[in-house]
Image (cartoon, rainbow, N blue to C red; front, side, top):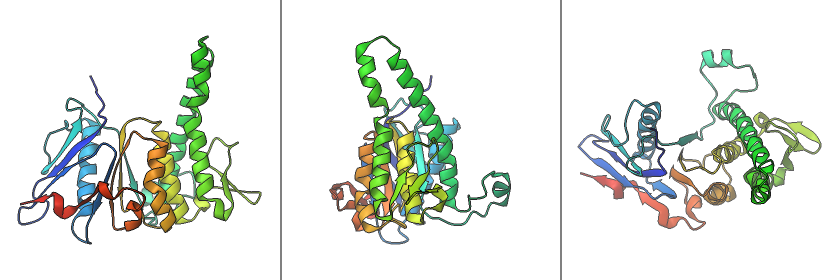
Amino acid sequence: MEKRAEYIQSIEIKALWKGGRHIEWKLSPDVNILSGINGVGKSTIINHSVKVLNLIDSGELSPGEVVQGVNIKLFPEDATTMKFDVIRSFDHPLLNSDLLEKLSDSRVKTELDWQIYKLQKRYLDYQVNMGNRIIELLTSGNAEDQLSAAEVSRPKIQFQNIIDELFKDTSKKINRKSNEIQFIQNGETLTPYQLSSGEKQMLVIMLTVLVENGEHYALLMDEPEISLHIEWQQQLIGLIRQLNPNAQIILSTHSPALIMDGWIDKVTEVADVTMK
C-alpha cells in the first residue's frame, strides 16, 4: 500500500566530484537553503535529487535505495512515495519542436510559459476539487461542516491577494471571475503569457504552491531569485510558507536577499555538507 512521506530527511550523494568527495545533507522539514560559490555543485545536488525523486515517484526505485550514488531518505522511514514539485527559473525559449507542434496555444514560447500552460490545468482541477468539497460540506447537514465550508476557499483567496499585492505597482490584478488565470490591467484583460519574466516566475511559484492544496510535499528550486526584484526575493520564502506551511522548501541560491527575512539559520554551505 502506498504511503506518502511528509518530507525528505536527507540527501546523500557518493563521489559527486572526482577525488571521492561526498555529500551528506540533513534536511529540515520546513526550509533548506543551499549556498556556495559558482561551480561548487549547488545545481548538481538539486538536479541529482530530482532525478531520484522522479524514479521514486514512478515506482522504479524505493526510498532509501541507492542509484548512481544518490540516496534519498524520507520521513517517515516506511514511506513509499514523496510528492514534490520542481520549479525552473530560467526563461529560455522553447526549443523542443515536437512539443511546439503539439501545443494548441501559440502563446507558449518559453520555459516559463510552458510551466504556466501546465499549471492552468492543475489550477482548474484544484478549483473543481475545491467546489466538490464545499458542496459536500454544505449538504452534510452538519452545522460545523457548513461553517468550515468557507475555509475551503481561503487559500485561493489568499493566493489572489498575494498576487494582487505583488503586482500592484503595475496595476495588474487577478481576474477573480475567470476560471483560468487571467489579469486585468487598466480595464484590459491580459493572459499570464503577457507578463514579464519576473512576474511569470513569481506566478509559477505561488500557483504551484496553491494547487498542492496544503498537503505535505517538497518544493525544489534552483536559484529562484533569477528575474525577481530584490523586494520579491526577500518575501519569497515567507509567502510560500504562508500559502502552504506544510511545504518543505529546498533551494539553492546566490542571493543574500532570500535569507534577509529571518531565514539565515536555514542556510547550509555546500562545504559544510561535503565529506571526504
